[in-house]
Image (cartoon, rainbow, N blue to C red; front, side, top):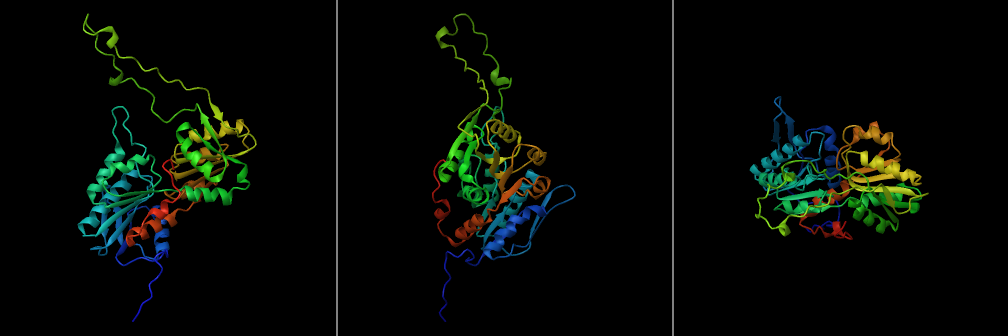
Length: 367
């Protein structure tokens, strides 16, 4: 009997041996996994993930994964450390159960802001990467890493997908008169992202300069201790170490015209919203009549929904890389762009051994 094959470009076309698990024990964090499974036309794998009375995480896989391609989807909940342990234990359980490959799907990579050495701290994101590789991960799918250099912390393939196509689509379809908008970077550090959005939408760009930065202020510690008192003739005067001139932040300025325009602030993460609220107030003072905030990852910790509701911000648009249904109930200004489509397509392509380049088309070095 001759069987006609299905088009490999079909979203739902997957070979046998695919298992998708959700590693999160929190019900609200499973929604993205369900969306991805529905798009792929498969059922979520049977697994129990729960916390024992002493807060230890226990994972029990309830179906065979021997020789199969396993995809473990993990969205970050409020308890980020439990989220990491759930992921590690799930991956290790699949490894010891003889899975052929284990791909982690972490739309938001936890501890991504701790990717640089600060004082006597540590590069925690490198530690997390090492732990995941050691547990048995063979591939990682993530989205909009805080710093692209984090990919170098892994010794396995990492696909860093982009959410910008979905946010750009939202701007074009949901913001009336977006042609009268200007893309805003709330600090010089996010100017490249703003430039990328502006060039794709054929809009102008504005940059806010002078606000408080995220970088830690210099603190008095051992690194600032003065050198030992030199003895006469021990060091030649010309050999003295020159001191770096301390930074002084200028008054807040907006480079670019926002008067009578819609201002769209873009960034990768929105967590502590103080800087976004301050930026919105500055833009209002400069004449912007409507203000949107667009970000990939909506962590929205603590009282963020209340601060947004009381601010000059008209709308905050984030993707569903992180569950935020509770925050949406607290603040109707928060909207969601669904990115399950690109994650499901990435899973399908990896499972079928297809190229991933289609998902990165028109993406430049600075995107």
